[in-house]
Amino acid sequence: MHNILEKPAKSMDAPAHDLAAELVAAYAHALDDMQMDAWPEFFTADALYHVTTRENHEAGLPIGIVRCLGRGMMTDRVKAFHSANIFEPHVYNHVIGRPAFSDTQSPGVLSVRSNFQIVRTMESGRMDLFAVGKYLDEVVLDEGRARFQKRVVVLDSRYVDILIVIPL
Amino acid sequence: MSPSSQALRSEVTKFTWPPQGVTRAPYQLFTDPEIYKLEQERIFRGKTWNFLCLDIEIKNAGDYRTTTVGETPIIVTRDRDGSVHAMVNRCAHKGALVCLKKKDNVPSLTCVYHAWNYELDGKLKGVAFRNGLRGHGGMPDDFDPTQHRLQPLRVESFCGMIFGTFSDEVEDVETYLGPEMASFIKRNLGRPLRVLGTHSQMIHNNWKLYAENLRDSYHATLLHTFYTTFKVNRLDMDGGITLSERKWHHLSYARRAKIDEAAEYAEAKVHSANYESALDGPGLLEAWEEFDDGITHSIQTVFPNMCVQFTLNSLAIRFFAPRGVDQTELFWIYLGYERDTEEQAKMRVMQSNLTGAAGLVSLEDGCINEFVQRGTRADPGQASFMEMGGRQVESERNSRATETAVRGFWYGYRNIMGF
Image (cartoon, rainbow over all chains, first blue to last red; front, side, top):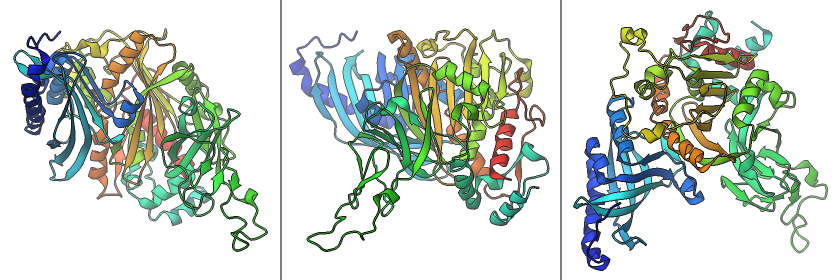
């Protein structure tokens, strides 16, 4: 339960937009800077993080590419990144479009959509346009900061080049 | 050496299999465009059954689904009488693709270029301006539409999967699989299915490296350490490898057992188990025992390029399509059963995190085969060494620390390629 907005929703709208836009940007910068440990902190404790393709999303299919239910599963992904998974080192650079906001049915929950492109640079120097899609977010105030209670990452392409180990 | 393989050697320059046989795979196999071309003919257009799609993907009359057999584009359709057809996705006129979408529902198939129109079974139905316009042009009088159609494939459905072949000679799918392989596929897929999601992965390696990788039970717990870490799957678990009669297909399985710390791991100083034993999100591995045989993990390959995975309750078909000599598209089709309860479906959904392009257990397979591709491309004359578990090509009921199924793949490959 995110009992966050005691003020009427209307007076929250303007600051919430800024906070949500800053959250979207800070999230991308943290990943681009490889601050993996900070990643779960962008979410509420029981948040949903789901990476899927446009095809699955439009068909309403539940399985995509990543599905974390709760911060614990995100922490596990971070630990696996550090100590279990093997991959060729690489970094991301997100370019994010201007977010669009809409109110949701639930008071205090702001719905945000932003388009993104991620360029992946490999250890060898090779640069690829790795992912293109949209973030469909639900942002709330949680412990005094804006957090995602839901982030659905919809990729335009059906395929992933090589693998995904750093969250998008 | 047989006369046919002698003839082949003139086609494929300087290729000889080392005298050690299937314990070696020359690196040239992964990089030579001539061998790749020959595979299209001898394997994908040869005496094999190729996975096309699922029955449920083309449920209704007029549904089509496109795919590839090797590099050949294919259309699979459901006709009005419920029958399934497969044909090359290439107009009989100028050779353009007829169907462009992955899936659609259409009354008939029409090529966009000159509007040649085909029945759902690929027979030519109509040719635009066949009789010309205002008495001019048109096809010659002896034009015979029955001589022009979309090139058909033989199709067969087995356990909800539709297979296609260009061969008139290959036996039926169940015989092609053999009794042991067929019965395990029935265990896994022999009831109404539903698709829970799909995606694919572009991997930068020859398709056969992934075919090897699937059959390589030796690497499973060494490269993929997420499982080792969480004590779900270890080499010392009860399990084994079954090869089909002709060694083309295989089944690797494990039974859940109480894990003791294995001394072999400590001695080998393998990268493993340096991770807390509990998941912060234990929901990931919530599972139920689905079958009475105790088998909790299985990977079953069907030659040439598909596999059925059952990892805990995560059921998926993997289909890997060659996209050039050094590129492969690996499709993941996650499945459940119609009969699944909501809770069971949820468990399958959570467990999908284990595999796929971001699979906690298996994401390494996205890059490891590319590492081999890059490591070997400069030295086509050298070969890999595969003698784990001995040199024989036989089922191994007691251990998965073996490369027997990889040798089995090469045994089948040499056989069909005439190498």
